[in-house]
Length: 191
Image (cartoon, rainbow, N blue to C red; front, side, top):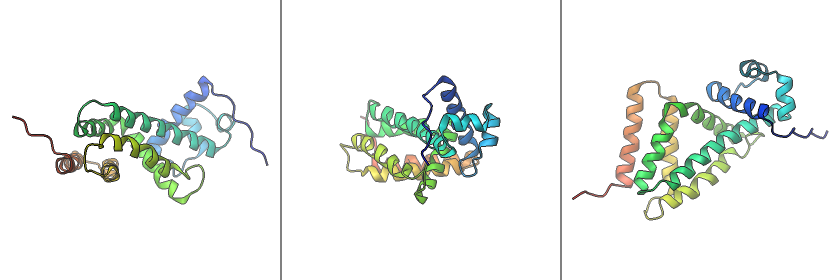
């Protein structure tokens, strides 16, 4: 059965997508149901299906929006003037901001769902690696530090951050990042 063409982008579609991203960042993707989502964002399941073609189409758009934010972030870090250490510190600070917690949760939710290889999540994890490793390679070009190691440590600590519930947990996670940077990209001694 042929699928219906997706309606062109509109201000209302963009508004509902942004609201859906916020909703999913707070509630997760695992049990996403159109009825509660539509009610929470001031729409209806019928409108969402019309605008996004299907629930999978909406989920794909939500994941794409999260990825776009991720790409903007890593590109900003790549453009940050200064040493690799300063750039990675800048990236860490940006990611750890309380207002990004929902976006991180959405990222990890999509990442884990992609392991099953089913649409709409099927290539989320692979594309994420393909997007993050080149800018990290540029940031680390003058250092003998594999970008994959930096990305793995960064994501592991961010996953702990999303799971953390106390200020002590957050201090521990920040300390682990600082220790990692101290051992892999020590700052130059000052005179």
